[in-house]
Every structure is written in C-alpha cells, then in structure tokens.
Length: 401
Image (cartoon, rainbow, N blue to C red; front, side, top):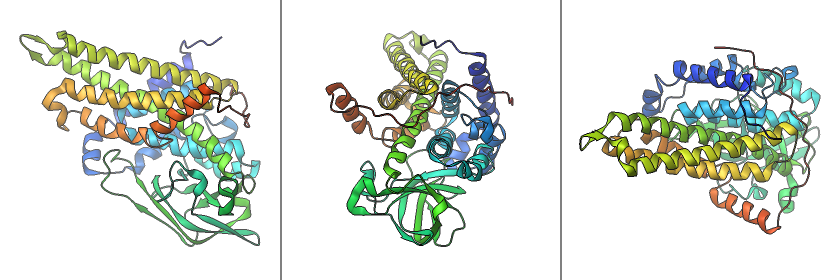
C-alpha cells in the first residue's frame, strides 16, 4: 500500500533544507542571479550538510535518504533557485547514483565516496553541439589504445562544466553501431587534453555554471570505463531516469514558489477597494497553480515510492517530469500575470521563476519526447525491461543545520 504520510525523516529533511536556503541562498539570490555570479562556496556548504550525498548509502559516505526525502530536498532547493537543484541533478542524480548502480567497488571507493562527502564536485556529459535527444548519434569518440582509451570531441550545455572535478562522459567506440557503440567513462579534471569553458547569455539559471567540455586526445585509463564497451547507452538512460526524477521534484518546488509569491502579493495588493485575491479570476489562477502543483508532487512521490521498492519506474518518472515541468512554466506565467507590471521586474522573484522554468521543459528529455514516451506506453509500443535495481531502505537523515 502506498502511504504518502510524511515520516519524521521527511519532515526533518524539509525543515533542514528550508532553513538552509533561507539562510544561505534567498537573501542573496537576486544579486547573484542579476550579476551571473556562481558561488562555489554554497555548493561546498551543501556538501557539508550532506546534501551532495543525500540518497547515497552511508557505507559510501552518504546520508542514506530514501527517495521521498530526496525529492523533498530537491523541491526545497528549487523553491529558492533552480541553480541549486541542478547540482543535485547532475552531481547526485546523473553521476553519483550511476556510479552506485554501475560502478565496481573500486570505482565507488575512488569516485563515489568523495562525491557523497562533498569533497569532489561531479557532473555528467552526454549532450553535444549536434546531439541532444538522439543520444545514439554521439560524435565524441573513444579509441582503444592498449590499456587506455583516447577521447576526442566535445560536449555542450553541461551543468558545472567549468567547476566540476569529475565528469561522467559518453563516447562512441564505433559510431557505425550507433547506440550499441556508446561507452561510459569517468574523466578527471587535470587530465592532459581536457579543457572546459563557460557559456554566457543564458535566459535563466544565471546563478549556475553551464558550459562545454573539449577532449583533445585525452587518454583515459581502462579502469575509468564504467560498465563494458557498448553499455554506455543503457547506463546513460538509467542515469537520465534518476536525473528526470530530480528535475520533476525541483519543478514542483518552483511551482510552489510561484504559489507562495502569488498568495503573498494577492494579499498585499489592492484594487477597487479590496485585495486582488478577492477577485475571482485571480483566485482561478491560484487554484490552478495549487491543483497542478499537488498533482506534480503526487506523481513525483509515486515514482519515489517505486524507487524505494526497487521497481522500474521509467514510465512514472517520465510522466512526473513531463507534467511538473510543463506546469511550472504555466505557474510562472500566471504568477507574473497576478503581479501585473511588477511581475515584469526583478524587484519581485516571479520573473526569475519564469526564466528558470523554461530550461526544464528542454533538458532530461523535451516535453515533446515525454509526450511520445507516454503515448508509446499507452499504445503498447513500449514496455520496460528490468534494469539493475535494488530496494532502497531509508538509512536515516541525522544532520541538522
């Protein structure tokens, strides 16, 4: 039986995360975002709090949170600003959980443990200048040379590209095999031939680093390969399932932030002798925000419950991501409408919410891709096959602020 009553752990995570963002992020985010400032020290403090190893088992340096708690953490971080949920997505969801699932014990000790402890910052490199959704067409190549692979090519739109220490990247050992030639590697900053850069002029998430990675004959030892040759596509897709979960949870947080800001403003602003919250069409927009946000939260928690049971959840996570991200865009649009002309100014946070919301309907699978995924499941054209998946017992969240 599914029971979504919050546990003591769930409530502690919510309280701790909310206290953290109210002290460490919210007082400063307007200036950081306006100036495009990325504050690595905040990520360091997130590591000290254990957030960067939230769902990783304690034996590997993590907190052992269950997936409902992890969703709550992502929701609270994005309620403050998307940039800080993005760290949870790429560092934890796409990289660390992939190492936990697919890495050898030696690889977990070497890379996962310092990531979970927040000692190293990690990211994920799949997207390329000419490759997004079609991940089987990677142009980045990996040529076997003795006990190493030589990587050439580049990645684009990579979160934390210019500040990460460790990169889980994907390259093709045989492009003629398309997705069956894709292979996964851990690349470390400082390897000769590896360079990174930052992209400027983004619509949103300006307090977060987004950039590019270039590989110019980067020699990667065979022990840095994750899984076998040709398993990279399967590894990437399982990683993206985890990433989508964090994106969906974060989108719920952004929508909740839109509700919070709109309710506050609707009480403060008066027209025609009464609070604008008394006007029926304002009520309608707020009610629709609440409806969509609660649906999104339940979809995320359902996927999280399945994850906790060790049950494949690609369909459910896709649906949660599709709904929550689409809804967050609409919630931000309505929040600006409620704020009127003030919503068009960065004096109020809702314009930032709108700019930040747009990215999530593109990354981790566009809304159009998720439309097709859900249709294919409904029509019977697609079915899940088992992946390596184990039940996830909650191990207790004990660190406070």
